[in-house]
Image (cartoon, rainbow, N blue to C red):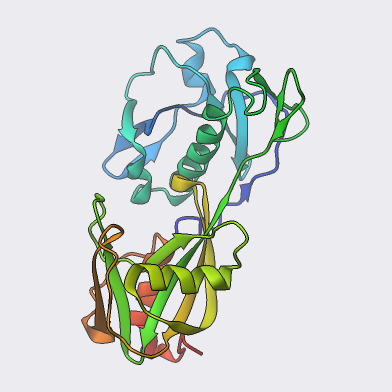
Length: 282
């Protein structure tokens, strides 16, 4: 999956440090990101590349994280862009290489969104300032604090013997097969989320949830949790047409091959190749 960047190591602890010439700078404008794109290979500008274009102002940089020994910084504004770099839609991170830079871009976008959405205090409307000790924003007037929010969500592979339930989203650019998914609601356990989402989207009852894996998904500030479940009773699909364009049962051998960038894709492939000695429903 996209967070699997071994042998590179991701360090998410906050550091109050200044950027160095070899630090990467990630600049977003809405859902566009500044990168150099060569085929499917990407890179970000470094502080050293930006020094010749801009007066160095450390207040414009926000430390994000490190990968190995290299630090990554967000920058608040970038009037001039270095030669060879262009703005691209963040969807490029789904397929870009090297994988550790693609993962860095997605994770940086999640942080960028959090900062962009918390410029002002949600309690009193005053300006927020960044803590020098941790990744936290504090109101300059009422001292209200904000930390990055991560939304828990589930990915559900509904199985019935040799069959897997696959769906296609309604009114989205992504048109490939996917698994059922949904966000946990207030006061709801993950087990309850699974049953509710499956019933709401396809009208089916399920049982025996088995945890598979989790995945951070920075595109939507989400922590995804994947489960295999078994059908419990009637297999007749009642489609929620506002959420889904299609939902079908497919035999294992009829499932089209896909990629394993996302948790959904890996779980589909796991089931499709399920004759390798591991039954995902056990």
